[in-house]
Length: 160
Image (cartoon, rainbow, N blue to C red; front, side):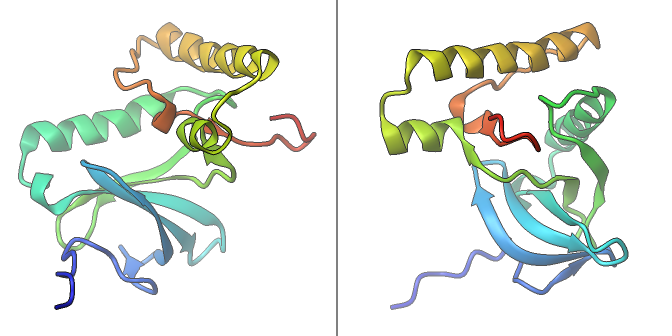
């Protein structure tokens, strides 16, 4: 017997709101799924976070979702993901289009290597603190700080 198809999953090739073509699913959590997509006009790769179908009828959840987008967009920092767009899909589900990060989450790193050396640990914590300081200066409190929400990337100079 085949597993039931997740009806909220967006198939590869789907064009969202006339401008983002889905190229793959990156990840899925309890509240949303994240897809890699290409902006059709600009040719730029982006990440598109789409609220789960079962939550799309809750005005409280939707407002929180859009508040997250506004908050992140209001802070300029290399330690906080850039937000490009937010709106609703044709089916009414809210989405956020954002910078596509290359790398891995801190959770994945911890699962892969188990023990992170002290120097790397201090560097990661320091950079998290820089992002949080910028957010706090803008009056924003991050309420879901966990390894799954910390993403490790490399800067143009090769530094992590």
